[in-house]
Image (cartoon, rainbow, N blue to C red; front, top):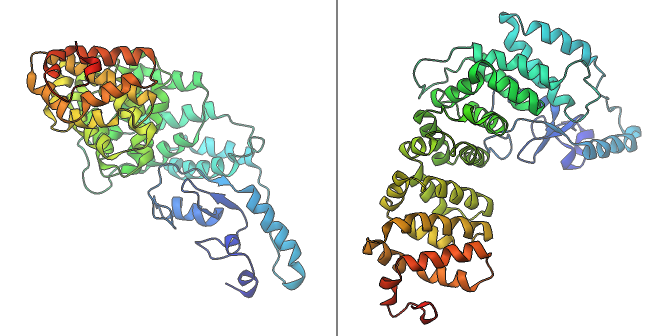
Length: 414
């Protein structure tokens, strides 16, 4: 670092190169770096963490920091007379011509990986300026890159150690995550050949166990896909898929990954035998344990909603009751999360307690963990009418049992 850089404000300095930034970009952790330095870190050195915070990255977009760039340019002009160092504007590139060349190269197997990496860099560089690339739309590029994913074979068995994911899969999936195709194109490409892209992404999640980054990226793509495809393409998911996304939830390495998995579950559980498959995949005990530890409103709402869907099935209710903390955890969320959280909690408990009228031990446990008290408080609160009716319904299931306890509010006694 020369004397000129020493005079610069610290936030002008790239944490990687330790030089004044020429083209500052911000990554998903909120940290800002010089574009050239962070691109080398991510795409040349294959790092998947933030260089400063060491947090795992699930979103690899580089967002231009225009405000900081203007400050740096202004600072350079003010200090030009005190140094021979000059600010160098990024040289303009014929992006349209370059993209056309890359699109031709990507069709040649020996050039595919190199071309995908260049395309990713080009997309990231121009994401904030839609006028820079005009020759190719995200729609046609998405279709082309998706074809590489479905044509590449994965290892026949799950890869628990090492990283045996084909390089072309890594590059193609990360490229797809950067693209923004139209809803029509996303649906068409995803449903093509009986949903082959969906099958391929599910296989990536179940097979590439040692590569968390690509599994989360595949999940991000599936989340967007499941939001637009017809219901029939959500029915054929395998138990192994639910086991794998349950593992992503359980590991809690990536918050973004966990939210993505919960969003996928919300989209697919209502179709086919997916509830039964998710239950078989061990989802319920994991959700209960995560719900006990989490206090973030949106996450709790999603977990309660998924649990409520699963407990619509007898197998789900059995798995819920089999967990020693199930009733206590859900009861504890009443009046602590949100009105939506209250509604999901009450619906879940109603599904479970409705089928336990003859099981006095369940009614006793619900009383002991404070569930009855929470129900009574909820009824007296300003919750919506339907939630209040469901809560009164729950009281009616075991009223004879709870009436006998001295702590049961006289207001609700028969």
